[in-house]
Length: 160
Image 1 (cartoon, rainbow, N blue to C red):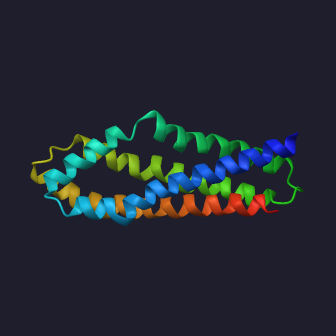
Image 2 (cartoon, rainbow, N blue to C red):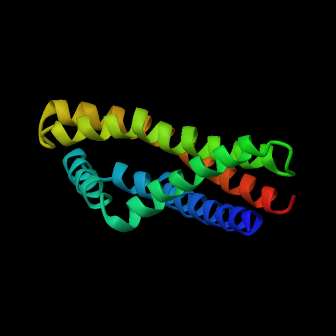
């Protein structure tokens, strides 16, 4: 019974981390580049809108639901450390929890809050936008790679 539960959780974690990695990849691969080509006030306005729109049940379920599954897998891996794939499950869980959730809450969200507070047509807004584009995108690359590595770890664990 526990084996079936663990396999199901591992599949959910792999799918969730992969889905989130894909979302972040889109931003790293072309969304932020497209926004950087707009006039600063347009780019700021678009990103402010994205940051509001992303707070929806679909994204939050994928993002935080995957985190909950990862937290449970981490606990189960530690509790049954001798099981094949336990270290890979723990690695995947930590990659997602630290590299995706931790980076988001520690870096991307604070940048988004600063952007939300700025007037898009101001000199302050233009300067913030310039810094925001490079910093936010760099941290997004980290989230993308961490989520993708987590998904790969869960797939490897399933093969153990």
